[in-house]
Image (cartoon, rainbow, N blue to C red; front, side):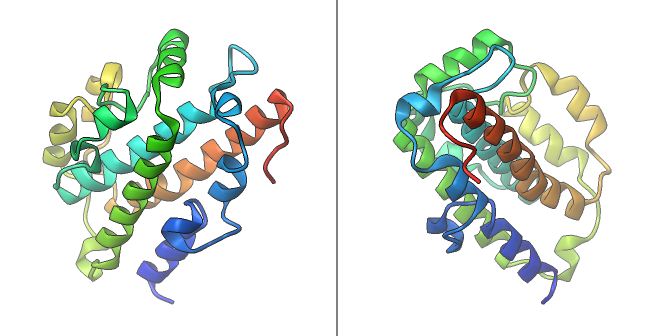
Length: 201
């Protein structure tokens, strides 16, 4: 198994079965079998909703894999703002509690699930075509600035534009498309438990 195959195997574990074919993936256990009401619940003021978490990880993967690392248009550009019901172009970093509430309330959840699947498929398309040099090198200032110009980083734009260039491409890819998703699915288990509808594990 090479780096590409390993990445795609791990990626399938954090996406729906429709994307990676893994019926026991963390995404299947975390975000399925729930009502829309449960997806929008914030059991405590210090917790995000499952809907917000799903939106956040989808937007982050779309922004970093496509705009930052690949220099191509985000999946979001394909009419998804209208379908999702949320026009903001960032991925939620630095949001206030009130902003989390608004995104949670406004999201079209069926469209959100479709959007995340579309993002996951795009990532698999991109990485599936990787050659050895594509894993090498560093995140470029141009890639980060491209995403910044698209409004991807919200209130944290200045910090990210300074901090992210120069980081290893492979680390950024796995960090956003694998580790970031897994971390927030752990958070989602807390939300589910606090909401009284199981951990999803």
